[in-house]
Length: 210
Image (cartoon, rainbow, N blue to C red; front, top):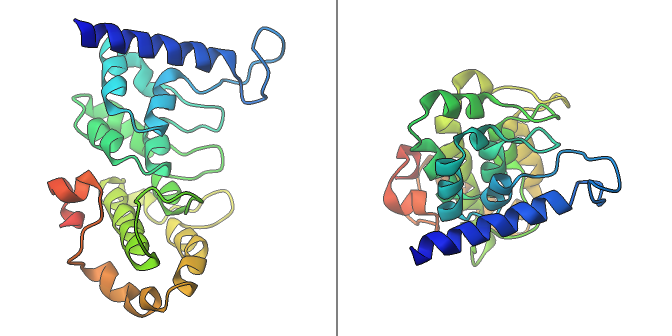
């Protein structure tokens, strides 16, 4: 009972924040509203699996929410490296809804695999060095590729680039900063004996991560 009350309170708070802010930085009551991120998209971005599960239970239609950039739950969880959220979605009983999420492209024509290749400024894997960080990035790429519809693997976004091309571009600096990464990238791509801290890897949920 107490846990239910706490969850309801958190959901209510997230709803108030989401409705108070729009992408333009203006309140919807004083300016044009541009489809702010909904509560479920906010918790997905931050990897709060428990609250997302409760929201989907109370509001199943929320699984189709998108932000102003055309990103749905799947795209946001992949872009922000949230394996717990991804695992929750993949285990969903609504197979058709998950298929729809996986087929979705954002406003720039990026698939989930494109977003999985875009290296962020923060370090989501908490890797101690460039070698392990690159390893985790490759595993994440392979994991998303495994679940993505085959025809989207070589899909080009609006800029005419595939996910693989973006991966090479965005990770080039990481490779240059560590000669070990540069020398062993092919070996790590084939198979690795050292796991990162992703639960999908530890739980053996994806064949590509074993």
